[in-house]
Image (cartoon, rainbow, N blue to C red; front, side, top):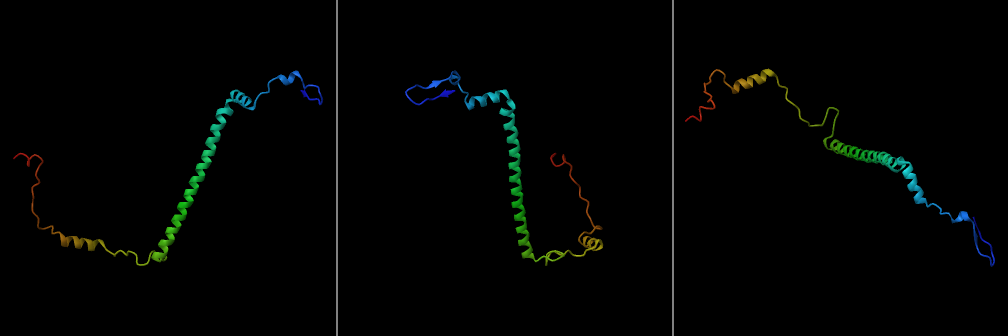
Length: 129
């Protein structure tokens, strides 16, 4: 304990004040050595948790942007094609065809009664000459 008196007398100090006060950084170092979880585990766990939270926020933002773009594209398509309940107006309309009509068309193209026999050469026949 230090006492200061006013006047011509000098400053008196007690023997306890001559002891060195530990600095805050050295006490922190000792605390880290005594408890390794605080030094290594806590930063690792906090980095993992906060990293996961940050990534989830980034992914959610990209999903929101993609949804907005899809909505805008659908509005453009809807206004261009004037959609009705059954689909776009003036859309592709397939013909009503039957198997019999297709058979008649194929028979007209191919005549199965007149044909020629053609010999298929073997692999070694063409090279033997």
